Image 1 (spheres, rainbow, N blue to C red):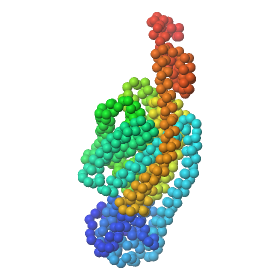
Image 2: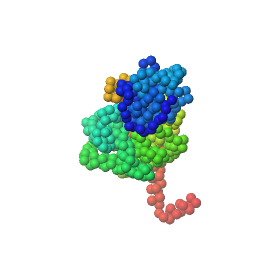
Image 3: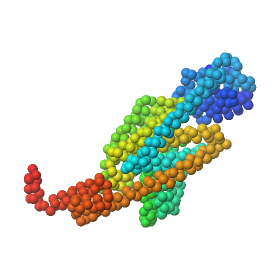
Image 4: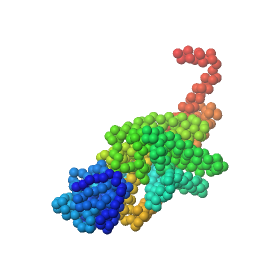
Length: 597
């Protein structure tokens, strides 16, 4: 057996056998990788969770009795030590002097054949399940996606926009995680106290101004400009999310424990103010002098609103997590994904997050159309931008909520101990749900007749794409970790990750740039033209007091959508009725009212 576990004892002493101790630490750094002949240096392999990279062991002079000091606790959550395992160290090489073999106190059945085979069978089973589920998902999801992309009307349009946004988010997360691995590999976060926050904030500011410079260079090239701003917005947003997360973590460290939730919520307001100040300063210093570059300013507006919406929604979500758990979640390089193997969320916390997401979904379904209608009637630009940001925050809160609930439910509760399999099940299920929601929106949603409705569809599609892209990115990140560990050439697996972060985009970009993105731009341009025509007809109708029949004829001649024609016609009828009431005297209006009575 393990003997005694001594939690959090980090005092290291010299081992009797220096070579054995060094080899044991090497095995720990390799996460318990199996040695030749199927034997394990520790007996737990890669299935035991690791804290601070030391596998929970100090070199405390283990004797042959099997006493076993722990530098951090061994988590049994998720089924790492199930009923099919034996907690022995038979046949291990950890802490037994120079003997090289452990033959005392264990029979033959308690050694390699018991522990090692059970662990190997579970790994093979997990890998087999993941491959089987992946194959079934591929032959199911691909035809569904192609069928929806070939549909007519809004279903096709929304599917193509989801593919566009999915690719943008997926690539942004992929590159962001590679950059984070670079910081981790070279220990840049520990250069000085608070280096992680300073570097994260500087990263956001530098990326933002690089985006401004590239947008200026490509201001006359619509394809490059819009594609860059789409990917750039998500990349900068994830950098902002990283900075917000570290800042919130620091705020909870310095604040009293009972004030943690208040500190995290308060920092959300600070982040919103800082981003608004950055964007306003940029407008005053530069952008207001470049008003002729309409496409560039519009693309930068979209970039800024997406950044602040994504960052604020993340901050609020983290504040909600802190409130329901009583602790700020440990930051993972995927930000909202698995935080710590030693913390499992309770059934009540999982239920709360699901209810939170469902309530926000219902509220968004009620509020989004009304916000769009109200913003359409507002003449001031800052009001319309504020409404746009509010819609982004609302939809992203829904997306983050479902992502978290899915991770807690699938990774922690249902498939604990089977990381890749659990994440693949969640990613596949999330993708099916996202495609289903998209299809229902395409069939039953309102026609895209105004800019505000088009923006609403775009925001909802972004939220749907975030759930799908982030869930699949986590599967790819786990795959990259495996490849990085298996084929690393130093630098903690950074080299293969960099190579993959180049190969994967190289495979995606040709289809994205040559087919998906041009079609999305073509549809957006067609909608923009229809919106301009509709606004011109509405302006003429107001100035010339056109009759409803004349407005209908002009709208049909311009090939406007039937719902937009009906809206313009009703507006003309309302104005005609109001004009008639104005021309009528008080006595006539009173008589008219009596007659109607």
